[in-house]
Length: 235
Image (cartoon, rainbow, N blue to C red):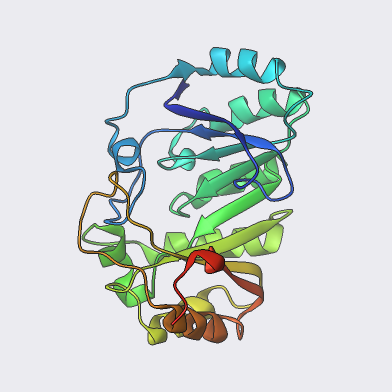
């Protein structure tokens, strides 16, 4: 398996763990707000292969206590379960970020007890899902199947939404909430612009609107938090 990026240490990507983050290339979606668009499109140059990654991890068993996979979309890669098995043999818990468009891979990972923590993106309301993903159509059955699998069978998990002023409104959070009703955790994060974001003229919602979004979401999930709230301009 080809690895396209590696953050050697992070305290943010895997809750409760000092982890490294492994970036895999390719994605089903073309979200206009994506921070890793070159990875999603397959344009990012390879960094190493799985053999080199495992060698690196063997030197970090005393420093790290977790490995997080992100992308791109990790669940596109058929080799993912086998690589995770080898990582777990080294003693590392594993987290996987996913867009939820590959429920069959999520089922494989769950059945193999390979992943300790799943983080699944909820892009938008059903009506706006495809537009928010930057593609013509989305099979919402796949998204809803992944949500169900994670909520019923995953050992631990979170759902999360990147909030964009041009794409989200209050009513969308009622619909998204209905999709994840009864979830353990739901995190909202305000969009932040970067040079790697493919399309301009996107903005974070105002602070007050983020509070509205979170208030609605609390009807549907046990824990709802706004990530990066302290960085937002409070008006």
